[in-house]
Amino acid sequence: MREKFKSRYHESRIKFMATGESPKSSVISSQAPYWSDLRLIFPFLIDSWEHFYYIDFPPELENTQSTHQSILIGIAMSEIYRLCEICTPEIVEVPWYSCLQWESDWWNEDIYWYLQQKFYLEKWDWEKMPQVKFSTNSVEEYFGASSVKDTYLLAVGGGKESTFAFEWMQQANLPVEAFTLHNAGGILGNNWLQKFPVFDYFRNKSHLWEIQAHPQEDPSEHFAYRGVRNDPTITNALFLMMIIASQQGHRFIVLANDKSSNESNATYRGREVNHQSAKGAVYIKRFNDFLERKGLPFRYVSICEESYSIATVHQLSLWKKDILNDITSCNEAQWDEGSYRWCCECPKCAFSYALIEAVTDYRFAMQVVGEDLFSSQTLEDIWSRLSNYDAEKPFECVGEQRETLMALAKCKKQRLINGEPLGFLSNIPNIEFDESYLRISPPRNIPKQHQEQLNSVLK
Image 1 (cartoon, rainbow, N blue to C red):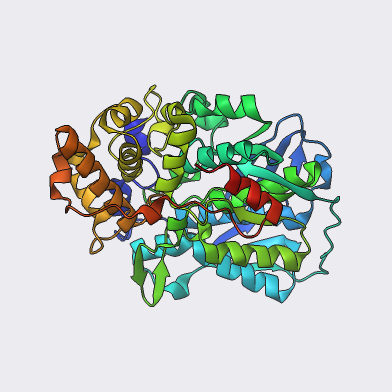
Image 2 (image 1 turned 120 degrees about the vertical axis):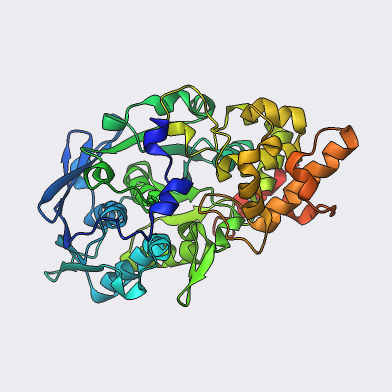
């Protein structure tokens, strides 16, 4: 399984891009979604091939038949983005959904936010971006949701930032439920359950809405696509969370995107390319403007948007150091059939290891991840790309290059003091750690009282 999957961003996948071998199609057509008990089904046609995307909800979900089209379109579009990356079409058709011109323009811009990495790595012209066409029939604009309260639905993924966000909101006694979207189940199996022990902690502290999503057949295998996968988890999660928030009356749908999401990976033909663009401040504002214009009562909040990833790990180590043993921050290991949780070979493992050691110590970081990643020869190029401003930042969910450099400098200083082996750290200059990277502030688009509660529990 490990050799077969090779994570979404594996180096071998990047090398596949721009070879001219990526599959293409003429038309991707989205058919009207429907419910079958607690399963929400999205059918598609890719030219003549039928594709079905399944989303399974827990029994706590009620009134499935009344899901508004303004929410369903967001879930459909996120799967369209995924399909466009795997088998890029000339055009996308969504005949079951009607919208005004401004919304059509919004979605046709939104597709760029997710396919920008694909087009950059393939070296395609931006003009070849697929055009999305909707129905021109009468438009239903009114949402008519039940009233919402200033309460929160927080997405947790089992990694550093979302675990911090969960603990922060718990410590501050904010009214919050948790949500997770497992892109597993069905043909992908349920092996992820043993990969994320921190979920037991979430379940014990709050109600956790666990959603499973999977295709009937993996389109990447069907079309033999071996390139990078920038799966649109953000859009998918946001709109799926709205289904639950509608029932539970939550106003705020919360993700834990940190400040480094604003840093781009590259510039290509006049446009910045940012693997994490849908997590950044510009996109958050753009999405909330969309919600307001559509009359949807929810607000997208990134609770870590004013903080760096290293600050979230530092704060967790002060509150509950041992919980760092239960997080998993590796996109490779979660798909493997074995029991290991860290592959110790990818940029995300490397970045996470550096942060954990920087805010704790050498022995604790090795305990969490399993080995000393600064001594790994296979990671030397990755360490350089993570911390060198002149190198292209890896297409992974990692922090700013200066943030990584600060973490490495702090690790080096600690190891020199303790007489521990430096490994790659011998290449890092002796610079003082910038303490501003440890500052934490609550987001500004939540009630003032909740901001004060969050500030009051920081150490």
